[in-house]
Length: 181
Image (cartoon, rainbow, N blue to C red; front, side):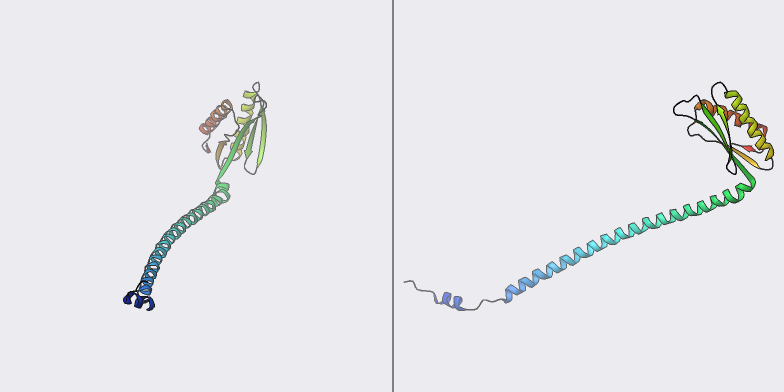
């Protein structure tokens, strides 16, 4: 039979000291709390930076929108107030059919949404341009106390028609002091 060492027997029967174990656990807990607080503060700072960035962008958008609204108000004022009392805008459309580009139509849109139409094809081109010039000259003469702005709508127009109408408008601008393009 083996003999036991009396010091070993005393150690087996003695209670375990928990104080050092608790000290180590509390130290680990302290470091975990400090680390998580630092991480929390870092994340909070990043979120605040993002929030500030988003708020700045929103303010820029609102400023842009308010500028757009102010410009729209000014445009409405000029269109409904100043322009309608001093300026007459005449828009000329020369549209062709997608199916047959030899048959076209000249539409003249006058202020007040009144319009006139002139048929145009390759054989009657000069006659149609003469009629357009006569219609525009009549309008210019009857509105001699206004500035007249002549505009060509550039959508759905053939280049040759655009050039002809543009030349006609240049001639009208040269002949009349109150006509602009």
